[in-house]
Amino acid sequence: MAGKQKKQDSARIRGIRQRWIANSVSVVLFMVVLAVVAFSLAMAGYYYDAMEEGLKARAGSAASFFRNYTETEYRRTAKNYVDNFSEKSKLELQFIEPDGAILYSSYGLTTGTMPGTPDIDQAFENAVMTPWRGKDPATNERIMAATAPVIYQGNLVGAVRVVTSMMEVDRQLLLATGMVALIGIALLAMLYISNLFFVRSIIDPLAGIIQTTRRIADGSYGIQLEKTYDDEIGELTDAINDMSLKIRQAEKVQTEFISSVSHELRTPLTAINGWAETIMNGELQEPEAVKKGMGIIVSEARRLTNMVEELLEFSRISDGRFTLSVEPLDLKAELEDAVYTYREFFRRDGIVLNYSDCPEEEMDIIGDPERLRQVFCNLLDNAAKHGGAGKRIDVAIRQEEQTAIVTIRDYGPGIPEEELPFVKNKFYKGSSKARGSGIGLAVCQEIIDRHEGELELNNAEGGGCVAEIRIPIGT
Image 1 (spheres, rainbow, N blue to C red):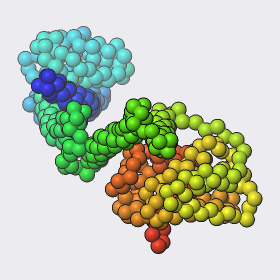
Image 2: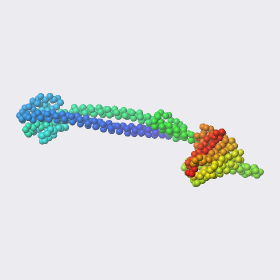
Image 3: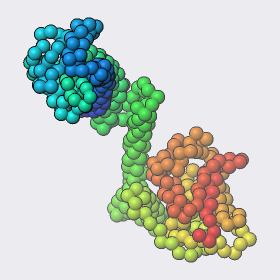
Image 4: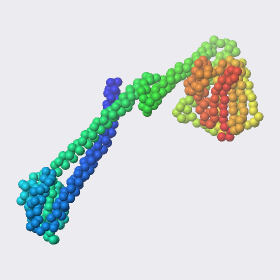
């Protein structure tokens, strides 16, 4: 199964690499082809236009030279002009008869032939110079020609035609286009190679990330990736490493929570079962002993009920079902009710609960009285549980501007400094050996947050721990 998954991941990685390279190279390939075509067309246009202008200039110059000659002088002079033409190796100079036949030619083999190209016909028909590009009907060779009519006293006596082969120019254009194409291919090769290195720098770490996340998903919590880059891949690596550590911590906390809750449930259940069986079997005959046993059963049952309530509250917070039933209330009155309730409980355990009142008769807020009383009771219970060794708990309330402040202080050993930032985290119990699920403070924090207040726990001067609640008045 693992091998099959690995093959699927490898195929997926290859697919990403192929798509990446195909997309990037295809765009550049299109641009290179477009550039080569544009360059070829521009070069061809430049060279062909330059050739055409040169041919037109030569044909026009020759035609102008013969416009002052009679027909007889024209024919005689044309023969000499052809014989003395100095560019026979590059150009062919032709004198055309009005019927389209070649009268004289610097390339003697064409004398007497009829080229029959459109430039000759248009030059005679329109009496204007006409250029032309195309294939020679006789040789099928690509040529360029320019034909200029020779007019004497308004009469068309012939035409001068300059012809050149385009083979050499085409060869030069093909060579130039080939060079540009080679440069484009070299650029594509360089782009392809650089893309391979670039994609590898992304795909290889990504492959490692995929394998690691698979291992995390299979239960290897806490495993770490090696960070090789300080870019987005590095940030992703840090995020996955952090996630892996947090999952391991959460798994550890959850395991400890389950173990702790199991122990916490087992202890009161053992006491309840033991005393219930003892009473049921009639082993206790004296009323005082039976009363003591029943008291233990009631106390342990109440503790079980509180634990179940805490678990239910946390479950509601986790799945978003935790709500408040807000109404106008007197925060001071709710605190005094909690103090009154717990004072007798603490007295039985030898703990003195002191309450410091404030000058204000009422502290009116908008909140949920049941939830706030739950916070007060939980904090008082924690103070007795963790700081009861000091045999004293102080509760005070005061008002600062528009904020009600409630403090609950014990005189126990306090909280280790390194544990203070985590005591309100769910399931966290730290080094404390006291009974509890580790979610009471998390529930209290949620309730105070819903009242737009603050809950802080710190070590007090002189020893012990102090919990401070700050809630806005009138909201």
